[in-house]
Image (cartoon, rainbow, N blue to C red; front, side, top):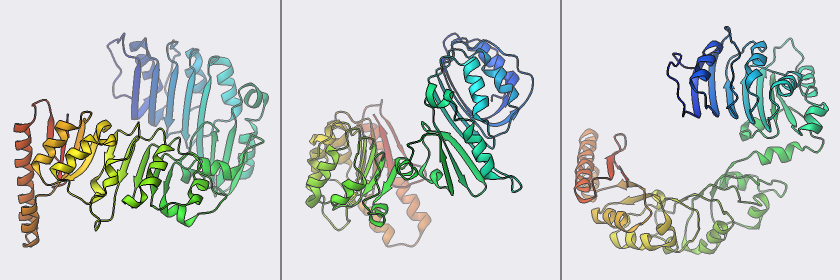
Length: 412
């Protein structure tokens, strides 16, 4: 958990996250004693060492995330939860271990009277000499009594894939690849595997839609969408809602699709990040300066394959998306274009530039000395960074990426 037990008491520390650690139960006492106002605890545990744990008061803790990649003695679990009477949220991920519904019911009923949200995912590979169907039935049946079904309405699902068994509460969101199974069980009488599987999909690429453009596929919870225009009515049948969409990548932008893209933006009220790419043979598409959306803060134009000149940068800064943009990725090869963006984009906080000096580029095409080319490009970037530091306020953080000889970042 931590390499040493804390010795200083903090009267202000309320949130603690600990990742990839060894858990010694006895060290929890010292941690809790030194954080008397702890409200949120998140722990990712790689190994558990069962030693003596003496229950201590932890009445301030209201939310706990626990993930463990190691088996542990479940008798310690009861002792551990004894003084968490104000816990309202509990998320548990157990790899390689199963704790059934009877044990969880005893813990929650006896020690966690205020628990409102319970999220559980547990996985285990079952031995070849063990009947996996019987194990799965016994496990899911332990979550079928009135405590789970009627009192709390905490339903669980159980999936079997070969010798692998996975059980999780309905409130737990899986990755799409985790939903594959040979057998499916659920404590909810109205559950449907196909609907559940589609509901779990968060990422969708246009290749998927082209391959599975069937009317029975509905993906209502997409957060990342890679789309290629034009789109047809079947698209809206497959993706009926964009209310959860956070990142949109357009891989075929052109002025002829302006109305379709704007219609898509209008149906994605929580969109935050927009990536636009276009065919390298096309000139800069002017519709880029017309689109409107109220919540986009990141605009990625790296793949427009166009070096914006100073006039285009000024137009971008005055466009609806440019005015509200806080993070911009763009290709430039003119120093004054950088200054134009920084001075005119009023909400800009981060600027990432793919830079290509024409003279260096042309020279690199004429020589086969890769080391020399890389050194020349690095020198050009270093000179540009210094020039920007001289031109811009000293409060700006400006740096060249040490791994990519084209990238410059400016934090405002």
